[in-house]
Image (cartoon, one colour):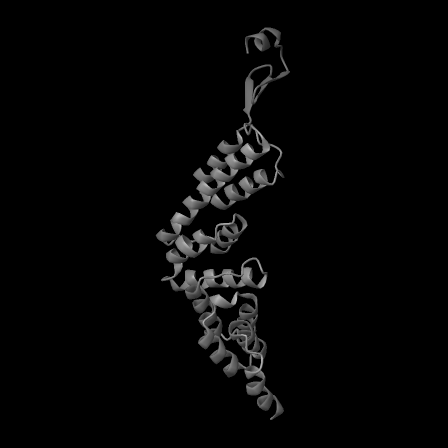
Length: 229
């Protein structure tokens, strides 16, 4: 700084660390580049958790090259950012208990992207399961992830609630596709068979018999007479 001061004259631009000094005729302006973690902290302070997480993901994927202060090997940098972003995600999820208007869809998506199924089926599900509107949003999020094959293993109680929700809302094709995409051990067999027969969801009916009971004959014996009539 002392050296910069000695060489400074009006209309001078000088960089120093993470600062840019602009010396005009009447004033000195100092522009500071925030460190990567400080940028995330500022967004959180402004209650912009989603924006903070997305920026953190950009750092992880190295799409955002302005990550001042992020040093170390590639693995060390990844670890620093991941730890920071997961802390922000935890803080955001904790607010679900306060009945705040949060983006449940993105919370579920982030949990899947970060490989955190236990958090999604545990803390997130427990926070929304007794709040009808939030629970329905969560179930629709699960359905979307399931149909995109981003998840296949779902706790049996959550899967049961999803199938009941789909049945109650008359979304039978989504119900059938969910049955086909989910692991067989997630399914309430009796519920699926009953709904499949009632609403003529033949693919789901056959799939459960085939995958769940290794029975390839019974579904044909049941369905062929119906199809022939």
